[in-house]
Image (cartoon, rainbow, N blue to C red; front, side):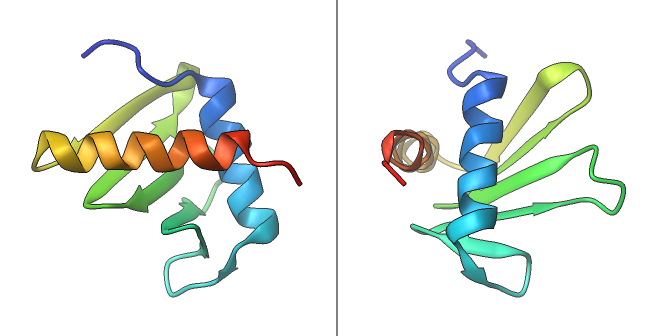
Length: 86
């Protein structure tokens, strides 16, 4: 998998969702993306559009998805949130 997202972008989007999102059963929901972390906070998750992104140790991430279109939609949403002004 090519490196489509960098760690700073993922963490920036995670923080925006946590700050501006609404409470959701899994964490915070913003612009169709849900953000949450594991109990110790070492691994953060972004979920939406049929995709689960797991970001953790050594700034590595993994995307779980069924269809390429889901991944493309998810990445577009992540980039949209990253580029929003707050």
